[in-house]
Length: 536
Image (cartoon, rainbow, N blue to C red; front, side, top):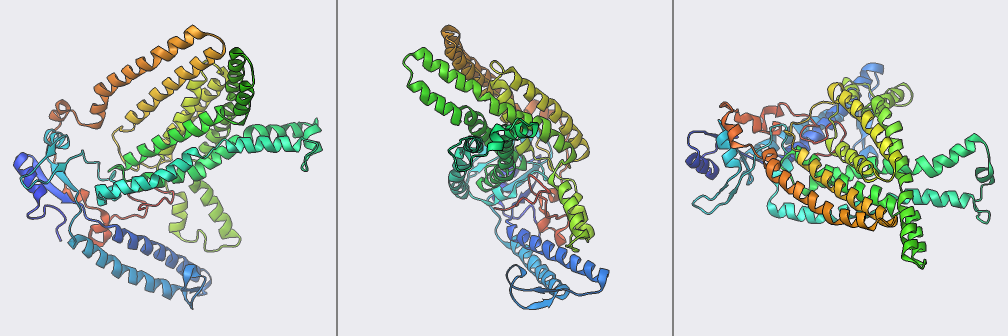
């Protein structure tokens, strides 16, 4: 079946009337999610078949598997024959699902292709109303490698429901206090050194040895930061990726990364920055301040608590600058550790680990750069450095060391380690700029409160009254002057571009092509190579 320029298509008729000289093709979007599901099952079955065949060639023994749930229950059958039968069945299902996807009515989305940039830019910034009353909302199409197909499958109602359902999960992650790790370890340190406690540890509290002092510093200093980092990388990262997919807020994979960047920044703002300021120590000092008699004593005690919060953030920045950045140079992605573990397992207990060429390649294959996570983490570090620039120069110096090291490591990895996944055209910059303005507003208020605690009333009032207005005006001017240029193609630039014929087959997904030519289990993902889901 022909996958583009369908007959009697209202989209083609409308654009032929409006742009008769430059309009070329219409590629309707078909829902091929069922094909992808069977292809992933086929890929797993094929990999299991390759492992069994490799083991048979190695020792001449044919293994057996159980056909029940997770291979734990059911009848024992020959493994090679079983997986061959599963692969053949999935081949038939894939062919049927592909024919079904091609023959069913298309979704409400289509790609429209022109032969020049001027008409494409005009169409992307227009709202068209054909004679039958259908309303066409147009957007600039992402590149063929930058399409988030799941968003194109869903209706506006589906997207709204999905966003509502994700709000409680976002709220839980945002509100869950990552500073709880610091408070818990602080309470543990106090319990170890309280003589009336059941867990009193005399050696830990009274030792003068260097090892004992090192343990104290690890428990109260670096260990809380390490736990926050593990929580951030193991839980928060995956939850935000799933949320950005489920919400279907963007038509492009770059938009998914931008959404993850925003969620990461706000999580870091609430949990890392404000969580450190409003931690257990600050809240206790605030409670003490309420019992004081004079306003000056109250302000002094609050100022001391806010300044003391820099200790946790300095340790957090030290951990990332002195440990995680050098570690990232050696282990740029989890695949390196997976490669080592596979080799060790293949030499010891699991002979099927790393036995096939596919397994060895998957453990070592290039991964994509996780722009959403890395940009979010970097902005959180920038927030820490900007907010404490006037009150804690040591924190700022540590953050500067982090940025110097991270720049060198990232430049090396982007050139020689990571693989390009998509091209977004620099659309992440407006998101970064908006958060930079939030950082500057935070700096203004944070510095003003510090001035108030030091009785510098006039300077604090000037900053509180003038800085937000100046930053708001600056943001408005930059948004009007540059944001539209970043998001839409300016007509004077489009006019200078040469004409080009774009093959419509580029916007046909590999799942719907003959024999799924070009398909790969990691394609169509914002982060490829990390085992992240494509559909949710």
